[in-house]
Image 1 (cartoon, one colour):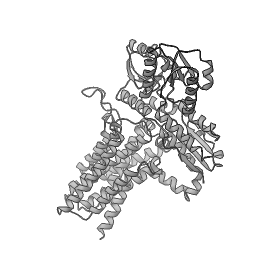
Image 2: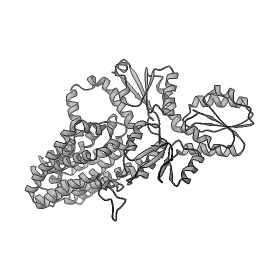
Image 3: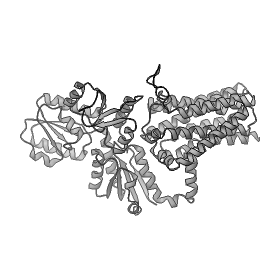
Image 4: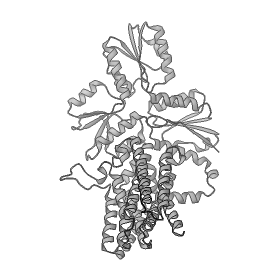
Length: 572
């Protein structure tokens, strides 16, 4: 079996995440394109996804109408910045703050008469931008050999390209200090670069093959590959999993994997998934069963059965007899809503979850058929239950389907193009929709009101938490998502604390009801789900299934735990 050693800090650095967030915010709710001056980052796959969000790359403003122009993470020269502003364009500066710090240091020492030596790649976007901040002579060298070509200089300020090789920079600094009398040294290599380079040096000690994932035009990614190769380990740099030589890799015992600071984690995870397949026959005794379960989850059948199970619990909590038609209605509503939403908003799925997008493309015809069958089956069941139930069913499904579709183009909400454009709305709409279909409709139909508020609050709480956990997963995976999810609006830590708060509130309310004598038989089932969600939220990032279909499989297992416990307790 092949062992995989994954670098802990592989993937986006905070500066790249910041630039992507700035770009998405700038393009949010706009019908016209937003532009970045030069590639935002050096990763072609991510740039393709941003293009689907109408964020395009330009290399010149010639002939461009007045627009919003985002300055890339590498920065540009102050002269180019003034040229863009003078042409009437609005500038949004997404320059990495660490690069901006180096720009400021060069400007400062240049004013003091220091000549500038930049250690990095001449012609690289960041280096070209840095050169523009100096009024004194600027020299760009790549290594210690370049020091010999430097002319006599009175005062020298040395700066490194932020993604420079740490060991190489130290060597260059030593050579310059031995040659010139007045030397100032800038500590300008960013911490993310340090961490990734140190991890590669550590990992290559124990592996017999190294894979670096990232854009082939990315300086920091190429540097990681170079460091690994210089340590004597066979190394390849790949942009996607399709470039892996599986036959060669199958001969390895331990494979190390890392990624550049501009590589989204979902690309890295796709590489990991393909590597794990090297041991597929050992991992899975029944691979067809595994593929069947994958289809079950990605087709939303698993989630729909989760709604079936949750309705069963809620009806038991409310003291009503769980009628099959009400359970089926929840199943059909959730299945048709989620399938239609994803099929009709494929471009959004492409940018937020490329893996799921490809799966939906593969089974597109089957999913369309399933969505229509589920919708009309649900409509038939609802019409048999009554007019109000039919209206509620149609309201939930239509709102769910249209959530990502343009609704308002003019009028009093000119900036709201879709319901999904309302910041933090995803959790709200999901919770309300599930509450209506799994609590309100059964309550109206069965005519039972015992513990209605408990069932309602419990359902809203766990569905809200589910949506937030999926949002956090998207952030952890560096997926390009909008502002509809609360974790995208707030920080990841704030979202995590909110999840803990909601779960704790559910538990406190349930225990308080028990204390004051308003308990019911199914309290343990709801408390068990609360404990399960707490465990899931706490362990979500550490588990190996965090980047796979297993994430949703285990997350939505909460509904089945609740239903099974409710069934067992009802037999007592």
